[in-house]
Image (cartoon, rainbow, N blue to C red; front, side, top):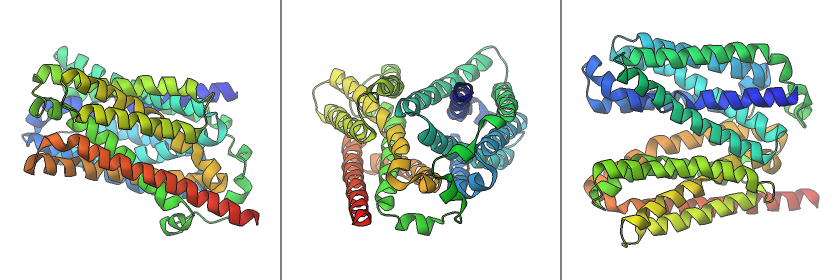
Length: 393
């Protein structure tokens, strides 16, 4: 039964990724239909992100009340409804309206499943599950591209993805007996307390440093993904078509790196995996920074992707061990919220820097985020060690 549930969770992670890159692949066709500026995609993304932040912060309260299985099923259903709404939208304001349930559904399911996996499964599964998310994120644009190439409208692409989410909802509903939250270690402690507020969470030793670590990681990943191609074209003078392919190597590095990380976790613990990721990131950023030709830039992007790969899943998987199982759902929800804030704020901030100063500052920007991330991760470990030492005395 445990293995059947794990297979369903893997399927859920694919579904989590399916809609994530859909807007970007469909928007060139969508904004013409709605007669809006191409920049309006940012409005949709911000609404989705805002909803995700809210639901992530509420994940502890909701999961405590309803359980991981029900929250996952309902969140996927909410996402399916939102995607179906996208497929029927006739105006831009309707897209904005449907973006609200999409964001609310995405945040809850992300935080709840990540916490469940962190508690119940080995670290390798966390890495492989996030690799499966990447597979889903890759399949979404392929489906949309196939639909548009066949002469159909983008609406049908959203309809196909919504149909898959509805099918997954049915599977999740039938799997509810398998989600045995009563077997979670420390569940009795969690059940006996009130849901933690953000203010209370931030008072936990090491929590603030953990949040900033997540903020910096997602800021670095998203900024690289958004601006790598522009950096290669405008600063390294790489042809546009070639730059697009080179920038894709970053995402390939993440996907391959997470598959590889799953095997490495059989030998190394989460702390070691995070430090290896940070070191690999440093090598990649330095390679991107050095003025020795385009080949080194390609190598740099691959290494940045490989460096990103183990950090996110390893930090999440370590959360129950570092902060206690009874606090892990609240902690992971807050971590997700800070991650999405970093995703929202930092790529646009670098856009301002690129526009007013130079896009050539991308490696410097990434290096600053990396340094802060490293310092915050080490500070988190130090605070947790001190707390353990005090508690044992």
